[in-house]
Length: 329
Image (cartoon, rainbow, N blue to C red; front, side, top):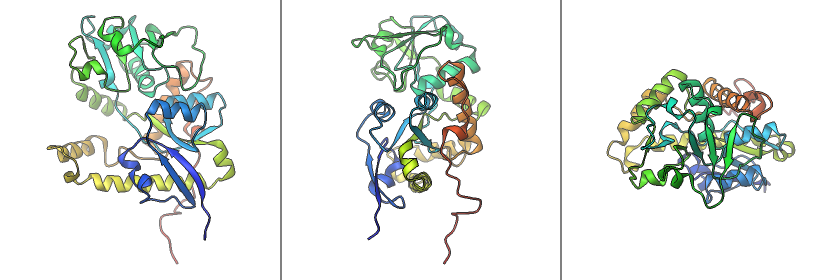
């Protein structure tokens, strides 16, 4: 009987991971335990701080800072979670905020400073809308996945345990919030809270057409110790992730599996705007551009000592040109 190594993978319960979770896809040589019963912030903390898992979907921005600090983690060029974030900039509707530049000098709440959603939007606000991150008073609700020393021009306050940025926004203690989730005042229809961009979808499409960026939120972290002990694992896992995603995309092409009347139309619209595989893995030109962008944001916001390159941030999964495409006897 062949012997496999046992590894753990903590990730979101996504369709693109489903075949790995069910065992339909089995990574060559690996007995994989997939853990999905935890929220993102808990998973990120447990992997980056404690290395509780051999591999884990983790915050892209926190990972870059962890690498800059020399922590023993690496990453595969697998991106389980992407999302446009314009729709997650919330405002108090009584504060006279009509456009992005109205945020200058304001009090803005965030989940934590290194959350990828906020990290991307800080960079986007600065580069696309002329809102420097140093011009904001930031208020963070959670502690960080990775401790860091704020630079001298960063105005960052850590809120006490009994404070919620969502409640503070509704009650006017904050002018705006950048969050990773749809916040409760929006879900409850609270008229005191709205979105910065009234037509979020149109703004996100405009942003994509200009920049080519469909923001990478999370990367697939792996303990450096696993790479050192089993250097073949990254390539085998990468191919398993690719197979799992391919199965998911074929399945999702069928509109009958989703209880949405206009699902097929939305699927086709996504393809027209973002292309055939907006969730692509690997250091493709599009992904390289996004990684260079977020790594650049990290450096200019004082979170890293230097600007990291994609090749430095991700373990190589290259196995030679024209290799691995077919198997012959």
